[in-house]
Length: 442
Ligand code: L3W
Ligand code: SF4
Image 1 (cartoon, protein in one colour):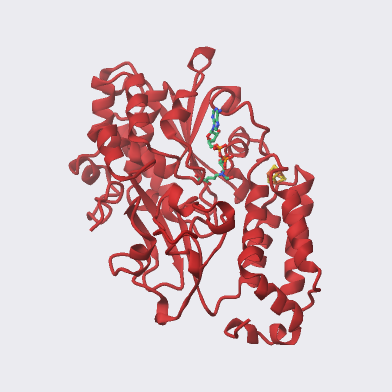
Image 2 (cartoon, protein in one colour):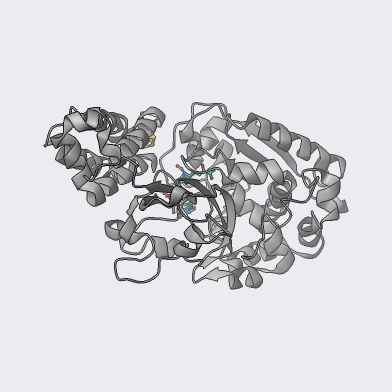
């Protein structure tokens, strides 16, 4: 059995309530941090742990915290990014829904480390029932004295608010999230300045994913060094994976980083293998924004080495033969899946969610969706495949925020690994129109 850090108590009856959570040792990290540690010591502990941002980018959390401009004289803030909207990703929801106090505990300990007295959880609008769970848990935490004025008699004050988004994926981008929190349209800002210097209300702000913040209590209770012992190389600790698609056991799993993709996919402890034992065709390991991997590059990298569930291993080979761990949205496809249709589906999403500020993204995502739709519906032309390649290459790296790249990469990877399937669509439009191609050999 893999080690559980975040979900250890997820199945304890009543863990959602303060009473049970506290009985299971909850809020110990707040006591330890406030009573026995200085803020800088907490930051150091998180640095030592090697914890990396769990929202997708994998940026070292302790390093990000150390960038916080504490000398500016302005108040600093911690904002939790709970705007979980990446297609294929639903692990933050699970954490907040089942163990809301873990996130709140992490928010308090982390806010203390950052000197923040006003912190926020920005949750996606579609998670309204989870919003209510969090609101209730926050109320309990205030009543028990973990939030509010003079926490544990230390003189430290903290107020924590949950703010609900209104259904825009782009508000998961940290600067768009900040704009939205300020009451404006969620348009990403140009970086630098990074939020750590000028964030919410132009004041120093750290934006961290739910899962990153939820890992902090364990790190403070057990020490950064203990955390760093779990995992592999620079991929330390555990990671939540949202698994979906053609597998026997879809769901949210906590894995130790470094587990082999083969074991994760095929052992009964995890995904249990392919649904109905059909052949594996492809994998998107880190949410819709990361490159798709064809079957022969899933268990082994291009050099024949084992592929592991880690930031480094999944990206081995770069985008030519690798992908990314991303947010851990693990989407599995069997041989009945149409890669063109899937790519069109993703493109439709990015076109819809583009905020429209930069032309390569605003126009390019529309073109990607349109051309992919043409091919998918049996109206494609031979030159459309090169056209798609050209469009995605003009978006990548030319936009204000990563949504542009996220729209381009899946298209590039699909063409790179499944060009024959695109060609089949163009050459045999009647089969495509009749949907014969789903199980046919391209
Ligand atoms: C201060 C520097 N801070 C980098 C920070 C940066 C960001 C993180 C990763 O970004 C984006 C992000 C998500 N001084 C810094 C610095 N930072 N250099 O570190 O940045 P980077 O540049 O390594 O990666 P990136 O891929 O360009 C990631 C956004 O993607 N995103 C994620 C969504 C996540 C959720 C969720 O957690 N629920 O939805 C989607 O667009 O917000 O902006 O924090 O500031 N020199
Ligand atoms: Fe908006 Fe797209 Fe530009 Fe991001 S890349 S700022 S979503 S137009």
